[in-house]
Amino acid sequence: MYPVSNLDELRLGKVKSLYNSNTAIDKHTVDTCDLSALGLAGDEQAESFHGGEDRAVLQYDFEHYADLAEQFPESTAYFVKGGFGENFVATGMNEHNMCIGDIVKVGSAVLQVTQPRQPCFKLNSRFSEPTLSRYVVII
Image 1 (cartoon, one colour):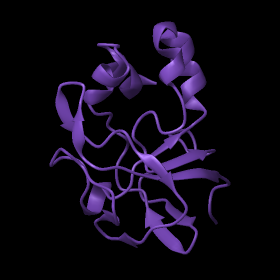
Image 2 (cartoon, helix red, strand yellow; image 1 turned 30 degrees about the horizontal axis):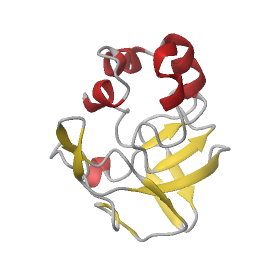
Image 3 (cartoon, one colour; image 1 turned 30 degrees about the vertical axis):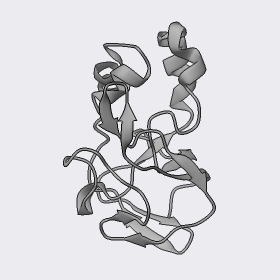
């Protein structure tokens, strides 16, 4: 049985220079793309610790953004869909109802949760909040 969730957006990004570093956090929406064991076709990562078989797709529950905006009011305008550079903007799939090993069906693809999210340090620069990535680990 698959968890109940909605995939609101599918997003891909290319590496470019932002926030004084190379990053692909600034992703754009697409209607469809191919998926392999290594990730989504057309999506890039600037860091070697992103991507690969165990990090092929980044999903983030959109419902978390409201809490983050409350905690970091100066950055409220940036807590929008895709703000964390996620490939899957979804609601209803988060650390409260998903576990490592869970199987998720997205369109015709079947994926397995392999790791908890580990926020990138570049979130701190994107949101101008030096403690954001650390805060996200504990929520």
